[in-house]
Image 1 (cartoon, helix red, strand yellow):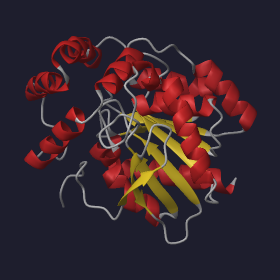
Image 2 (cartoon, rainbow, N blue to C red):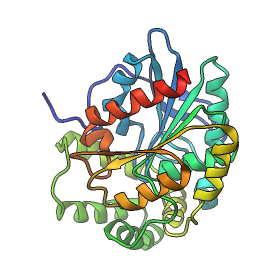
Image 3 (spheres, rainbow, N blue to C red):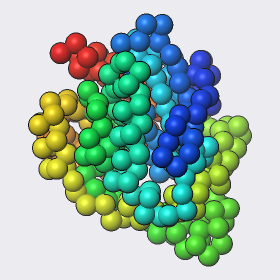
Image 4 (cartoon, rainbow, N blue to C red):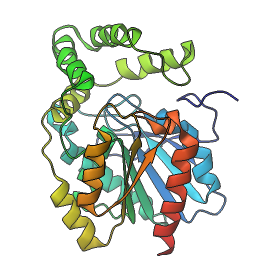
Length: 291
């Protein structure tokens, strides 16, 4: 059995959803008799393919799985305005998309990974009509000091002066010094490169700024979740190197949310240990839908 990765085979269909800035690229795996829709948001340099190992199992559990490229990311359209890619504006775009999916007749659960978690928070604060929120490998605000933040510091001047291709070369140099991740292959490396260089420069710059400046909005999110009766799950890999496990556990406590640590995973349990992640997500989502 191959190690799960962003190029894992799945039955999801490539579709375009209507968005504020143009088409939102998505992979949709439909359940036979769906009881809900799970909308999945990727991180800073991620894409819908990050959720490839989850699509079929989510659909098999009775939820339509919809994984998207955020606006300006890989195959989704987006503006040339850096401010449009901060969590609050992107959250408003996602809230509108949630409304369209909910109008199909089934409730929507929302999952945001890493930067997608900050965007998911923005969507809830913008009034997204969801019945449950999952924050995965995300945090209360800006990235703490560490290798990931240092990479953003190095990447911004490269993008501004030389373009996205130059930043990709820098990323490849940094990746070469790190141990290979799960599912590493030439095909996966090609996908990683293609999706990065196809991102709008404004999207990379705007999101990078947010990752170094986003304030702690946990109290605001907690109030909305409590007032709206929306349950929440915070989950992360045991070796998360973006926001620490302790930081995410504290965020869960402040949100009065469930908390789960995924073993044998770092920042991306969706590809590093999808089976254990699914064993947490599916029962939790089912409990929300039957409450």
